[in-house]
Image 1 (cartoon, rainbow, N blue to C red):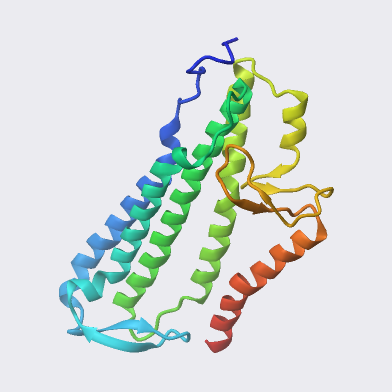
Image 2 (image 1 turned 45 degrees about the vertical axis):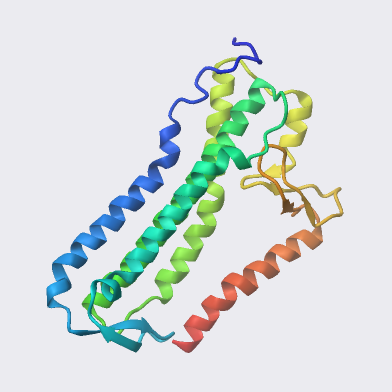
Length: 252
């Protein structure tokens, strides 16, 4: 077993590039859409729709140009670049604890990889969603269907905020266990209070907002362990996710 205070623990940095895979897929997907768009560009009409209303019917038009045709892809590229920059500066924002145990260091590495992966998946899903709408606008400009794609997009974004944390937490536990590092009783007790994605779950804590877990950034997170916290989450989802979706489906 390696020393807890060793600057480099075995396997700690191994396979780190896997967290960046969604970003690579984002670039490939974006490139594929742009290449296909360049092929159909000469056949597009001189005046093209640039905006579609809630019912999927165009309500704004402009003269064909590279900017008007590929504006959605440029926005997707900008989103991908922004997410990549955020992923690069994640280590500086994690606020790690002083002198963490070896087991904790594996867990912190897993959390860092998970955060990078979350940003990458959001980028990829955005590229795919925007790419789908862009292709529809080129092929069937008189009507673009985005209700169900938008619903699927929001659902997948919601899932991919949490699933990478579960995946990389398991990786961290496996790596630590393989090299003989186990959590202390105190660390085990703390671990039970946190859900994937940095959500606090302590029914004995009356506060709705609590400080983020040490080593997982600064600021506050929500406590779903008490009733008020759960209600807050439900209200947030209804207002900011269910509301826009209901409006889109109702108008359409």
